[in-house]
Image 1 (cartoon, rainbow, N blue to C red):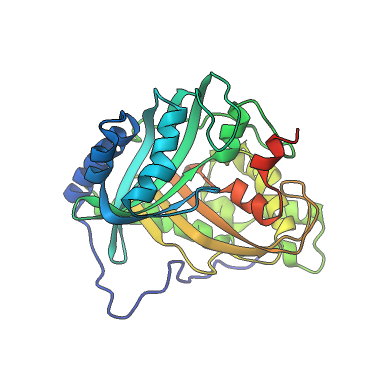
Image 2 (tube, rainbow, N blue to C red):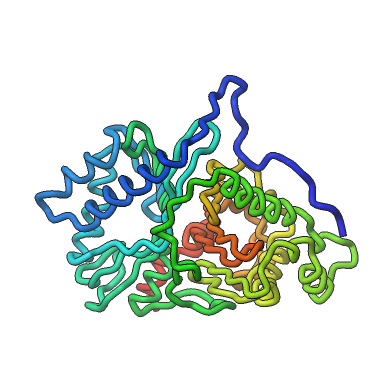
Length: 364
């Protein structure tokens, strides 16, 4: 098996870029402030929404959002295309954070979160019929901070999981288990106050080294069969980084897997067979941060690939070039990667394959 190469995974920097080294105390304050600003938005009423959005966002802030919301520019877009419709559909919405981490990457400062927006599904959202029942909207975010306000966000709400909870399933069955994502096994996802810069660096380095190992591709070997690739992935350099009791929390449409064997069987093997032609870092990560025993990376998009088989998600090969909106959140525990929360915009991927899941609901 090949050795892990060492290469840059972030987006290219200008030679004049001024690198920010964020002080841990400032990072703690950023996390507390941004978490509170986001909570206020979610729990707004008609009278307070505008004020709470203006308190959180710069006037010209932008959001890279999930399909079908996609790109938002400025306070008006953020208000009228994202938050007003959500609060109309879920009048009793509340925010439940499982993980809040922060840090700096290149010349940018970030706060990133994993959690749920929970409420009663009262009025249609995205034309999905209402259920009148509780729904936990899985939400994963990266917020870039300037002068204590958000200047840019990347937001992935799991639309597939929303559709599932609303009582519909318009696509092929998941290979993993569909469930509500738990918080970290250590129970400290929103409460830790890390002051150890070396620990943060070590966590991020472990996550990035494991990711670089994924560039070793046994599925491209001339003798590659499904069984051959499965065996090679179990005995892959990645095995040195995953905890024996690892949990891989995938997006709805893929589902959750446990242990390296489960991860390979329920996601990695079918993914690699479907996307043999792929570049994980076509553009590069816009964020790479470590914060104590946690780290995260994100690409928008960082993966570009050719849809070559039906193994992953079950749709016949289209040979289309597909891009992916992906985040990876890691818990580093007992010296290894114990948990990996992986939001992926599956609805956006399927849309590129001419599968419009929101339209399919009304054809069932």
